[in-house]
Image (cartoon, rainbow, N blue to C red; front, side, top):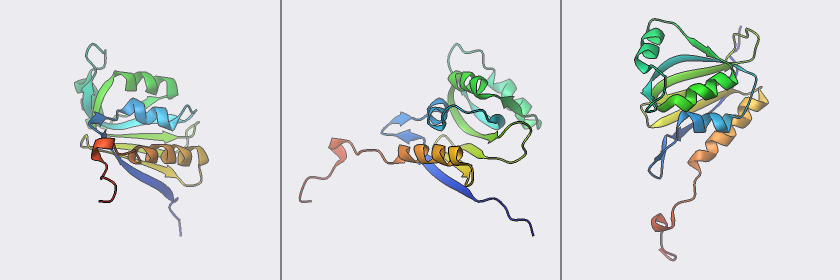
Length: 148
């Protein structure tokens, strides 16, 4: 019997107090690493003036291609993305490890879901940092009055 690895998973809103949490912000919370990254799905918008051809990228991924990045390449890609509407980004430990250790998914511009292999401490720590996005202090204007 083969047991599937256990994952720690968090889902956080992509919009917090009217501000969009973008791919770069999610990656900043993941933190620098030496993992091999693969973009498996992407629907989104590029930043104005960027060289990212979103339509070409979406077509390549639809045909079954994947796009591989190291950490620095991934950050450069994320800097060109204005909004990731839907997508899936997977990290694996190099070289050539076939096991997903961290999976980042954008869902309909409204949610980020991030899952980490439970036995990979840096990936679990990333999920914990990302989980902090949903634990924001409520703005003063939204707090109930004392005694209510």
